[in-house]
Amino acid sequence: MTSIQAGSPRARWFWIAAGSIVAVISLAALSAPEALATSHDQVGVGQVPETTAPSTTVIAAHPISVTAIAQQMQTAIQAASPGSTVGIDVVDTTTGAAIASLNADQQFYTASVVKLLIALDQLKTQGWQPDPDTAAEITQMLSTSDDDIADGLWDAGGNNAIIDRMVSTIGLSATTAPDDIAQWGETLTTPRDVVSIFHYITTAVPASARDLILGALHDTSETAADGTDQYFGIPDALAGANWAVKQGWMDLDSSITLDTTGLVGPSPDQPYRYAVVVLSTQPAGTSWSVAGAALTAGVALLHATLH
Image (cartoon, rainbow, N blue to C red; front, top):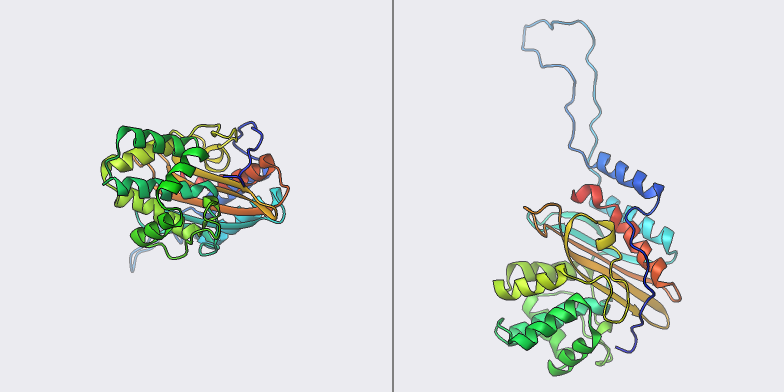
């Protein structure tokens, strides 16, 4: 797509700065279960305690709210990239409970995240049993974010008709096709709708097609087909976790778009337990390295909670 430009590769890193470490430690403490009201054993009616020492009251730590977690993430992102607008939705897929949420119903450009819908539409068109060539194309389009393949499938599927079909199939509430049918990356969506897309992939797509998609997202290459470093946000911030991601980036005259989305599992026995979606609009002229580091700083604050 002509509006997408490659960023210069940058080194991977995990913790952003000492401040992020402090924030993660604080987040872990705030997320701990509530403590008992007192530190001594309960005494039955009419019984005399074995000790006359006064009991010590423990003030319980209340779990941090989903909005507070997301606001911490937003603060970290905006500190690294001032002027950014951020939408966040993080959901435990086993319970449906929100972990972090902020501007979850606000629209952002999808950039290459829309390739999930392009892939799903193509697979559904072929009865979820793609021929080998199509399967290979979808795998490469998702894992390397190949724009040329996306262009071909977009045109073959009828451009905006792909979005209309997938909105109806999945039941998306706020995803709309681009005004310019040639610019699939200008599709608009919300963090909540992207979570719904991942939910659809994991619960409604037949196993063979689901495995093809998740396999490609799990094998996302560090360097995209256009030379961009894809390991910002989830891959860098949650190193050591199982993840399957679809990243997005796009350069417009008025702003840049950078998105990190995917499924994250804290351990092999809980693969892809959490849906993590962070969409951002950042000021025009922001370098890809700065923009990517900002998203990594925000997602890093989820490390203690998701583990």
